[in-house]
Amino acid sequence: MEQVRASLDKRQVAIYLGAILIGVFASFGVPNAGTLEVAINPALAFMLFVTFLQVPLAELGSALRNTRFLGALLATNFLVMPVLTAILVQFLPDEPMLRLAVLFVLLTPCVDYVVTFTHLRRGDARLLLAATPALLLLQMVLLPVYLRMLLGGDASGLVHPEPFIHAFLWLIAVPLLLAAGLQLWAARSPAGKRISTALGLLPVPATALVLFLVLAAVMPQIGDAAGAALTAAPIYMAYAVVAPMFGWLVARAAGLDDGGTPAVAFSAATRNSLVILPLAFAVPGGVPFVPAVVVTQTIIELVSELVYVRWIPRLPFRPSA
Image (tube, rainbow, N blue to C red; front, side, top):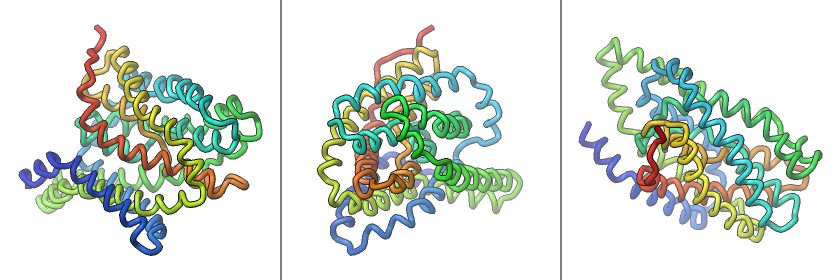
């Protein structure tokens, strides 16, 4: 089984690229491909479950005490990234709905598949997982503040806590508890060990399935709002290039090691689009405009993640003493 897992890890980028391409073709070639959206969250929860199995969950307590990492992560996501986002949106047309959609997604750090991609790149996914409650709570509190600052008071009332709470319960808490239970069973039972080992083969296939489902389901949603999506795309591309470098620089300035630094870089670059999407659909008069602009970021980000897996560890910076 170790040979199979090593082979999957070695070919993961090719597998993910294939899943993305198949998803794009399915979005155009399969009738009602958009209905696959209902499968995204269950697939995402399973992907996180098999990822959490590979993380030493017994060490989460010590990860929470890593204040240097937590400080770098929170400073990156809630100080540096909002400044970058505020600069980037100035290059958009002065259209409130367009700017709202871009701000929705770029101001909210990812809490789900960023853990998987960090783990696959040998970053310290344990640290990111431990920081998830803080990331969720702060984005719930600060998103209305940032929207009020950048768009005016009316936009801040569009943020509701339900999508964030739902994401934490079903995408983080439940998979985490199941993984912890299986880890305990595996430590005490040969049967549990065999099941855990078998599930250890699945992070790459499960991630590929999520990529396929997201692309197949979200591409049709762009539809009539393609013009707005194309207007936002260069902003998302610029963010995808600059954000991980800023995250990397903050982490290195904080003196983080080779596990914590990629985790901060991945977190800086990866946004909470799947959690934000229900908010996008709830904006009065915003459909299909706002969801389409949010979905565009998802597509660009997923392709960018494949680049990050190869590129982030090659950044030339060294930790400060």
